[in-house]
Length: 136
Image (cartoon, rainbow, N blue to C red; front, side):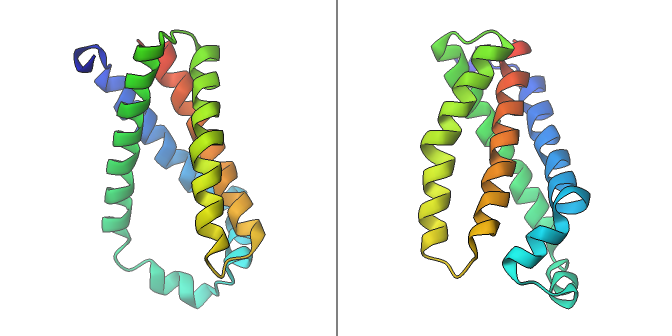
């Protein structure tokens, strides 16, 4: 199964997820995200220190996620954009939504923060599923 993984598709899916994150938490929903977390502009500036490591580790996580999703798509025989997105949706619904909500319930974050994050996850899961299934 590992030999069937399209590494270029995996890298593309991970890069696309990073680009989407930059847009999602920047111009699209940056201000509501800041408000939902209660961050000030000063706190965000302070958080920018050491972000290189955070972005690098996030990219590794997205690579891993795309590789595992690719294996699942191969295993399930999902070879179209629709089947790739369908599997991705079910993965998101079964794991991202529930793990994120459980984590959120034990944090001091407001509910809008959860919805912003899980919305981003939905979009990138669907995008990954589409890229990985179509590019086999």
